[in-house]
Length: 265
Image (cartoon, rainbow, N blue to C red; front, top):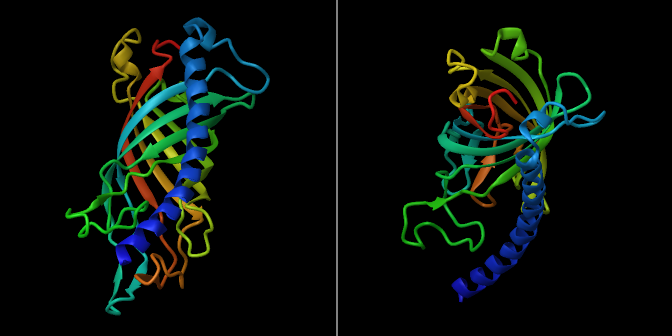
């Protein structure tokens, strides 16, 4: 009887997640249209196809190592045995598809990214709520995608350093799984800020070599609004936050351009 009622609850939760999935699908459609524009626009037109508002978009794929709780995790109390601890830092593979487009404002770009942690784990499936032990496995993959839409400003441009380093602070709307006890949606909007440092690790190659456009990057990311605060019980009946979440995350990896592909674009 318990499994039947839990399965029914899982269906209700699944419908809520399905609605959020539909929103993410809408974001994916927008990304697809921007990708199509980036691919379809002739290479020479990439640099010229600017209006007073927006220039032609570009698309990159990024693979990175995500290190959470960079400056230490928040203090929490277990509601099962009363023990207190700090949430540990974790390292996970993170994958991104990022579409960006320069604007008519100097050094300012709009960006839209889809990202997920393919190897992250959880104790239970968020759709069905069955635990890993009930499913006969060690852990459930917590690979829900998230999306970010925001604006970045080039504080240090590629031209300034002859292609070796770029620095760009950014601010955006992170649309990801709910984290507060009073959240009324499976996915919620969160204020996300950070600093992106790009490094031309292959800048010594000839400008005519496509591989030269592959960049290294390091991101210091911080979610300012939308994560658990002291006194929040998340997950319910499992853990109580004694201090605010400390979301500072270090992300480091490689960025590979997909469109346009020409090194001179």
